[in-house]
Image 1: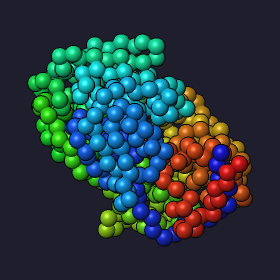
Image 2: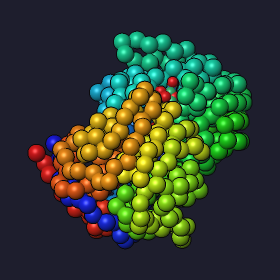
Image 3: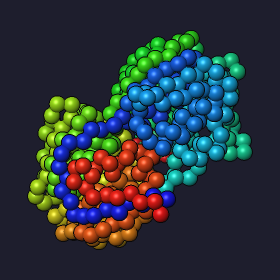
Image 4: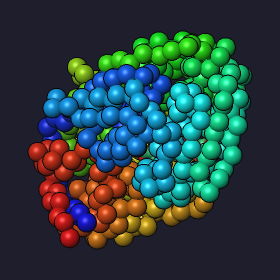
Length: 422
Ligand code: EPZ
């Protein structure tokens, strides 16, 4: 198993290019099930989650290949086995996003229920509620979601809001099913994340009829058929935000290329609040920080609010703030596995339910730490680059799920990260 050995403190400087978005690519890859034939997806990152998604689509009867030029081709002509097997689905929760497309394409689907998750309780009840509204009969058998719509799906008016607001993959599933349903569908309280906008734009290019893209109100006119396409997924805003926090926590200066500031307004606002300079530049931005890190309060919210997927990285940053800050996690209230690990690095964090009170410290100290999930591991890498001494980050496989060869991209900027297999 790989670990990272990270020397600190370092100062990052130079330019780095953001890769394509994992969270846009996954529901888009699943949506290729809707159009029999060969599609080509561009800018899909090299990540273990993408490999699992490819394995999953292949198990359904697709032919998925990574071309020399990095494109992914998906031939969905022969989708002959609409079953999302537990052995694959247990590796990646996002596998659930094949459910809607399979139901629309094959009028039946069996998908293993996603299991537990380090970031907290993650039910799929809203996904199922939305698909039932489209006329699917759904039951749970032996750990599998069994869904059928022998006469096809029928458009409906669907409210997709939940206890924590909208659901991203729930919206992806219901939208991907509604585009081939008979008649029209209205989705109220749809997620507005840029990844959902990218999916809706991709479906539109395949021949779907969708209005209200980018808003919580989606109007879908069902069509009889969709067509394969060539499509480029958007840049990864969470990766971009992680690099921004890396520049800030190391008092560095980074040119972040292929980064869409418009997708990160809440994040840029917080960075400027704590004294970081963020300047727009062609195809990206320049993030600079010299002095102290000021305090800030952060509440995670559905887009366009502050993203929960940057909560851990900003906690590492605010741990070095010149006073007290507060973070409230409103999307995944238990998403705090990184708190104890950061405290091992001499941070001063106190968790009270969904709230963490951060008493800023002068400096962080190196320590052996354990990654528990994708974004927590990114926060530990950031903290280690700012900490004094050599930090060992265990279970690096978590970071490989969402960041392509992170050490090979940070080391040229001045980081000292060694990957070791132990
Ligand atoms: C997506 O997960 C992302 N994953 C997550 O990123 C991200 O944290 C999350 O959206 C929120 O932005 C992908 O896109 C692959 P939700 P998703 O359904 O769709 C509750 C990362 O680090 N809920 O929007 O699974 C749920 O428990 C990952 O890249 C229900 O109650 O998240 C949560 O509290 C981690 N019932 C809230 O809604 C449901 O049926 C939002 O979850 C569905 C969700």
